[in-house]
Image (cartoon, rainbow, N blue to C red; front, side):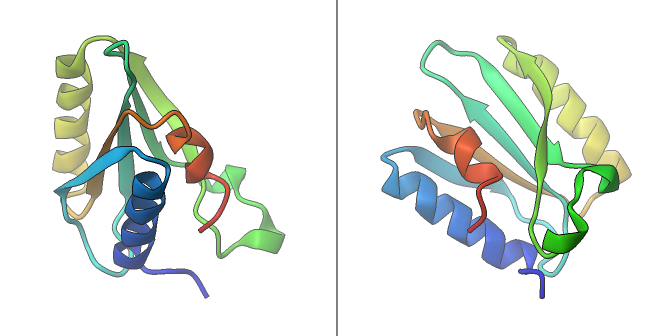
Length: 113
């Protein structure tokens, strides 16, 4: 059984904090199955935006796991925010989590919770 978006986000945020990173929930989406976007800011001021992986990326033997892909990279946060605004117009139920100062955040995304 797949975890709800709310539960997954809560667990992810807890793991980032355990790795001495900072994380905060920018937007709460649909509790059960809202799409989750993760924006990671590194110490150099660069940003990585992760989004749910397309169905073709899922392993049928691990169908209950959430998978993410790197969607955009930029040193301009405004560009990423504009892309997120477009995504919000398409899917108003999405979640947005921001992470700062956590070198392990990208690894935590696809290593299961």
